[in-house]
Image 1 (cartoon, rainbow, N blue to C red):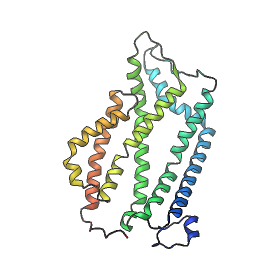
Image 2: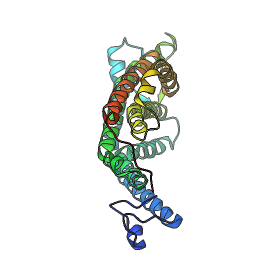
Image 3: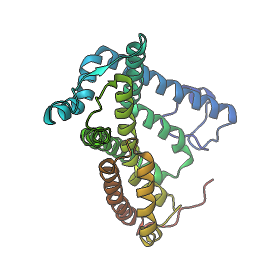
Image 4: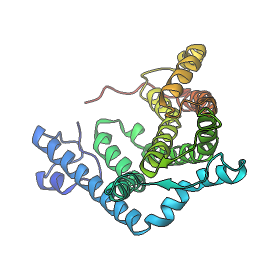
Length: 268
C-alpha cells in the first residue's frame, strides 16, 4: 500500500514520500494511530451524551409516550421501569456508548478512509469526501426513519399481547430495541454507498446489477427481515422499500460515474 497525503506522525517519522511503500510495522503504527483517534472521538461523544442524558432519554422515549397518548386507556401508560439496582447506571453507560459512537461517526469514517485511501488510485481518492458525506446523511436518514417507525412497531407488538395483558417495559429493553432499530435502518440505508463503491472499483458493473434486479429485491427483503429487530411488517416495509429504491438509484449513479471512464493503469 502506498502512503497518501495527510500522513500521520508515524508516517512522517518514517520519512517516506508519496510514492514510497510502507513496511508492516508502519502499517501497524498507522492502524494504531487511526484506532486511537477513533476511540478518543467516541469517548468525547459519550461524555456529551452523559452530560445531556435526560434530554436524550426523553427524546428516545417520546415515540412510546405518543403511542400511549393516542390509544385507548389501558393499552399502555408510557412509563418505563427499572427492575435491577444497577440497571439505571448500566443503561446510562450503554446509551452513552452508543451515542458516542453515533456522534463520532464522522471521525471514524474519515479515519477508515484515510487508512485505505493510499491503496487506491488517484481517481478513486477524489471520491473520499462525497462518500463520507453521503454515508453520514444516509445513515442519519435511516435512523430518522427508524425513530418515526418505532411507535408503529411498538403498537403492532403490544397488540399481540392480548387485551387483558398489562404492559411493563424495562427501560434497558426499550432502549435496546430503539438502538438496534436505529442501527439496522442506518446500516440498511448505506446500501447505495456500497454499491456505488463496488461499481467504481469495477467489482461489479451497472449492467450486471440492473439485470439482477429480481434477485436483488428478494435479497433486500430477506436482509431487511433479518435486520428488523421487532419483526413487524411495518418496520419491514419501512426498511425494505427505501432500500430497494436506493438500489436502483445506486445503479444509476454508478452508470453515470463509469460510463465514460478509461481503463485504470495497473497498480504499482
